[in-house]
Length: 388
Image (cartoon, rainbow, N blue to C red; front, top):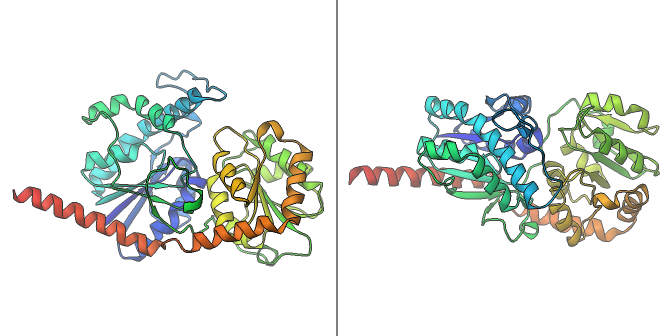
């Protein structure tokens, strides 16, 4: 069978999909993964065939369809609706390329990331089932409503009033951390993944000092979200720790003046480093969070933008981390949280319980069988309808 994976808008939203896509291929099925042009290197480097469906990025979608810049409210429901409309515009720009792909390749099933709203529409056009793939960090319903409003012309053209419901959902977040508002989902054990490079001995073996990894995600650039990353480095770098900074290489070069002696910065393989870390301090991105959960690493969350604090709050409430809200983002509070998590063993014990829960979740090979079942059920239903 043929399964089309529709990834998100950046490497951090692509990486959690890769192990399942690889498992589908290993089971003997055909796989293609799509996404915006900016995600192509992340997909291609995994060995999965990739097709770009739009050159636009989510940042481009701050402008409406007439090219006018649309301000995003600072907070509240209006912000979520505005964000949803941005993702709706990205979906609208992706849909023509996506429909061309499904017409030519004719997939049997589509696996679409949450917030990739073109996926359900392409599945409806192709007449195939689709499966929702989510980290379940707690995207509010108002984001979906904003996207649906933006996609009204595309929905009308397909004869729809709302996007079709998925055949079922997949979630890689341990059940203990899923929000009550998340839809029922089949659990999938997260396998930490990142773009690789040749390893050096220090990457898989740590020294005497506590190892602390700092990250602001894969989308930070020298001109965008750079200051929050430099602020984190300066707040953590004053402590007696082995500091690692996972960031794109051009960002690492600009960051050099702020790096303390003995620290390392660059595009580091977080999946390899996570088991050696005593603590990770980051912006709240889903892929970094999942890598820490899979390896039992305590986390300090310092969200750089609204909407990234949801899972940090839940992990903090569980006892496996600390959430520093923007109004509390001071050197004293961040360094104090780092010291607390490094010295209080209860945080690592709680993180270990979440790691053990994650390891009990179904493997990718088990979830592949559910994808196969979905295709077989759909084919049987179509055959029965055709024989009537």
